[in-house]
Image 1 (spheres, rainbow, N blue to C red):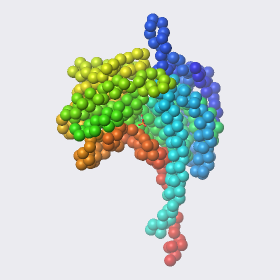
Image 2 (image 1 turned 30 degrees about the horizontal axis):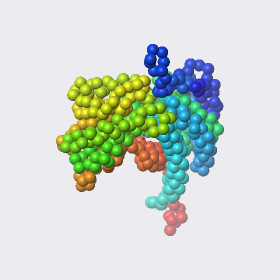
Image 3 (image 1 turned 180 degrees about the vertical axis):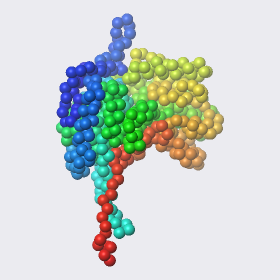
Image 4 (image 1 turned 135 degrees about the horizontal axis):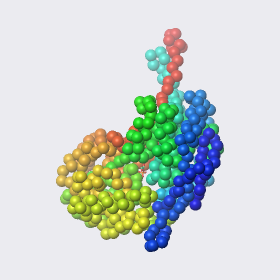
Length: 497
Ligand code: G3H
């Protein structure tokens, strides 16, 4: 086990001798009485409001009202520091991948992909920054004024990442914030905390002191004092819409706070009567069950036209049952243990409730539980009022609902609280074209004959309604963590003429 006793504040790795939080793996081993017990992966400091406020002061001092070394450093200088960081990050590649498998149960292929995707994301962001810088150096001459449009930092950023992409999604907010010249406090997710430990030293030695500071401990203790200080300029969270609302309310001047957030989603797939069912089955399988359905972009409900519902389910159910369960390191494991301890019970309850309302689990073995391993279940027909109809299950249960008129799924999407993505499957290009406009006014991405997903990472990533605030990705994230400023000079040369 890794017992972390250090945290990063003001360029120092501080030692912690107070209480710690133990991290249990979703991976279980047999215990007494024939039960299964989660394996201990390690522990991390449960720091208090005192350390949180010290971390805040460190970030505030490093920013120094925009006069600090980091916000005034040239873009070339910041890029050099980030490149140093990448080199040090790469040295920890295997350790971080192993910790990801143990802490959150992500399989080897996806844990490796997450690490490598993150490195590519950093390089892409560096490239985008150089482009923004070049573009912003362009002078504009209008109405006798020469304007140089720049991008400048916003101040102190509080960043919080999720358990399902503990490295990648945390870094999709951290990296652009840092590169734009802001100073940072970041809180690691509870599940997926230890994998950040090996990287703290890389931050410490790559950037000036105080630019990156870590927060550990219970969110309920460490976040409110930091937010109440009024010294946070940007709050960035990849997490739940409820937590986002709670955190924002702590800020004394909410209208002065910029929020950049990716939150809850209940993405729907719509399968039209003329859809190519092979494509729909393949994409819905990937879309709903990659990483056990624990993706904000997962397809979380499938609307299928009644005329093809039986055929779709006849093909989809067996494909779901074929997904290979296993430990994260088992070659080809597609269904792995769930990190959230309460999730198997919640999913089982969703299924029980749907069954009481007349639905069935249509695939063999669906819903069986062993420790924290949950065999994916396809539930049909889901009806309005059931938990699976509106709640974001964030796990391996796929609700399917039949429709007669396209108005039914469209109304479902229009009346939803969330508006992240939708997938439409069909071959009638005219009909699909007609659906695009009504749908892009409800969600932030419409996928045609393809699963919902975030990538490529250079595409804007956001959501409507309660699903997001601001936009992430590469270039858009750089914009989200900066402000456009202008240096305006009288055009005396032209004015003379
Ligand atoms: O959990 C939300 C992630 O942003 C999903 O990303 O579509 O690449 O799996 P992904």
